[in-house]
Length: 191
Picture 1: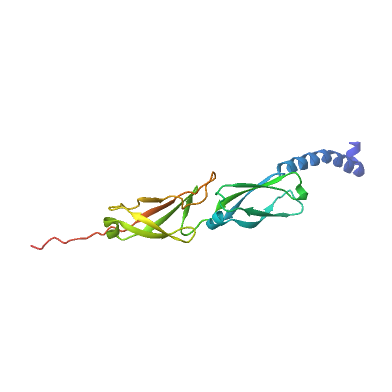
Picture 2 (picture 1 turned 180 degrees about the vertical axis):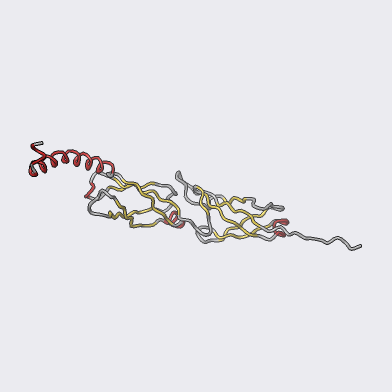
């Protein structure tokens, strides 16, 4: 009662109580935030050609605010690849781990290192078979062999035209064949 009734002694008492808990909690938070992970979205072409990106990382425990890093993605990098960069001087000893992911694309859907796209053809072409053209990821035109009597939503695989793979090589381009079935309605003869 003697310490708490005196305002000066009470402040000193409170400071002593707060001191160990503050240092322990800040030490724990700093240790947790020492290594950070973040995803970086890239265009599909960037995986083939390579790119440089300025990446901003926000660490709530860093009093200086945003940290800026330059990420160099070499040509032939596979989606999901992780890059480990040392952190700035304010957080020395830690790392920023950046994982590259593919941005959605209007032409292709990504599944691992494979790309998927649709090819609309006429029902006559599906019945007869033949060759159609589709634009690749690099912009060149690819020949797509259409088997005779191909069914709707059947997949034609073009090897080596997808995104880079982790262990080398490239995935495949999967072309889904789409066409409308013509339906003819005949009226029964009148009696």
